[in-house]
Amino acid sequence: MSKASKKHLLERMAAALERQFPPPPEAADLHGHDAFVWRRDPPGLDAVARVNRVELSLLKAIDQTRDILHGNTLRFAQGLPANNALLWGARGMGKSSVVKAVHHAVNGATGGSLRLIEIHREDIDTLPRLMALLRDETDLRFIVFCDDLSFDGADTSYKSLKAALEGGLEGRPDNVLFYATSNRRHLMAREMIENEQSTAINPSEAVQEKVSLSDRFGLWLGFHNCSQDEYLDMIAGYIGHYGLKTAPEIWQPEALEWAATRGARSGRVAFQFVQDLAGRLRQRLEKDGTV
Image (cartoon, rainbow, N blue to C red; front, side, top):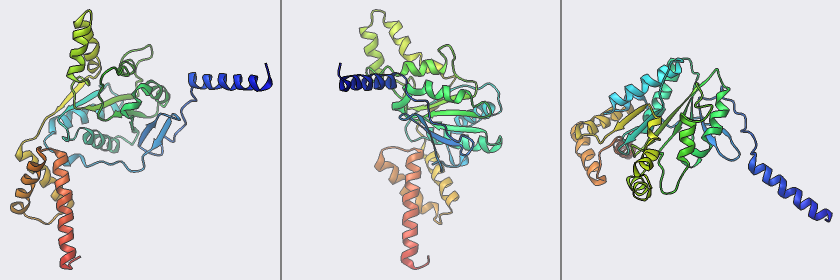
């Protein structure tokens, strides 16, 4: 074998070993920030300098679910038993917002040792690696958060999630909780479960395999569409918080028309209306020369 052939063979062997044994995750200054994003390749944690969040008090129409999640998170931060949480239901009703707001509130009340780490849906199969990285950080506690988690078709990465949460030899580290948001209660489309049921030798076992993922979450917190009064209450809260100078008889009809054009009432729609309202008020002030 020529030297060139030997060199090529060694390079192929080295590349194969790198794929089989990827480099360890990059170290991060976990004490310097309170929020991070998990990076798949190269594996590591990127600090988030400023988290996009709202104040806990501004989250309206979800009082019960907010308080349950807050209590669960507070107990976890205090070193007490707590559950993984699945926040499911209507879009735009504050599922991800309440996770970030609760983390901020609890972290401020317990000495700042609680970290929020976001893992993207497409990287969920690397969750065991992230868990292993956090296991040794015993002086900190971590909420690993995945927004808009769901599975479709032939996607089998849900098995990695099941094993990381409650299965496997090591199981979930004591200093880690997993919070996920989803529009689906069982994280999978109904047709996906029905297809498994229709093609399996034992339909009931196939369905159990699919829905058992959601059983790994001790807390199921449902978010539902809000009423008109709750929608207007959300907007009033934002208007008061940001100090916008406008009367209810002016903004309320506009807010109802705004929701009607979008075919929904939700916290997201309420915030989008307030952003539009604030922009128009500011524009008017500048036009009148009072700013």
